[in-house]
Image (cartoon, rainbow, N blue to C red; front, side, top):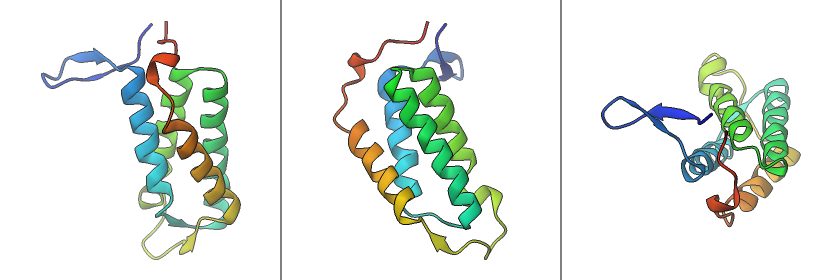
Length: 115
C-alpha cells in the first residue's frame, strides 16, 4: 500500500520518501518559530517523539502520520489569539533541532517505500 496525495491534475499520486521527509523538515522548522502554552508544548514533544520512533523503525507512513499530526497541532490552529506566548522549552527546542539534523543528511532511498 502506498501513501497518496493530490498531484497537479488533482488525481491521487504516490507520495515518496523524498516528499515525506521534506514535509517533515518543513514542519519541524516551523516549530522553532511557534509560541504556545506549556501544556501544548508537551503535546508537541510527544508528536516529535513519534516522528523519532517512526524514523528508528524505518516507517515512512508513521513519519507522514506524525508530520500531519504536528501540522494540525500548530498553535495557530488550536489556540486563541494572544494565548500561549511561550517559545519552545529547551528540551523541545533541542529535540526539534536534533530531529532536523537527523533528517537533513538522510537519503530517501535508504527508506523502504510503504507496502
